[in-house]
Image (cartoon, rainbow, N blue to C red; front, side, top):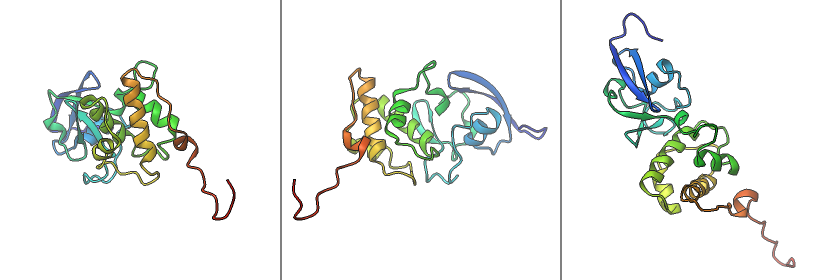
Length: 184
């Protein structure tokens, strides 16, 4: 919501569209995206740059929008999680995270999606270790990261045009080992 005291007025390019916004100069990109642009997919997490929930892409690189001043973003390409969808189809990252149940509460998911998108733009065939490294700044308190890593591997394969089936242990969990002395 803008007030008569708004000190900055500029055009931001968000998800391929120009948006004229007015806001107090001290507002972060996170605040302007949510409050002025109505794009609430990007989440307020810690607001200290520690959790990664607010990650968006600026000129193709992930940044923490809670630490970036919106007034410095004119002329830059900003992409939020709302910009991932391809027409009526989910982006492969969105589809694989959903298919694997890699997002539970979903709060961290937008930041993970945007960070992973930047990784796949730079490296279309990352290893699990490279994915874990890229996502090191994205905290998830609900899940382990195994399904998230598998989802990114799957999305990378899909983006390369390959068929992809997740490992069964990702879908169903690992088999429970037999107790000592039991058959099989």
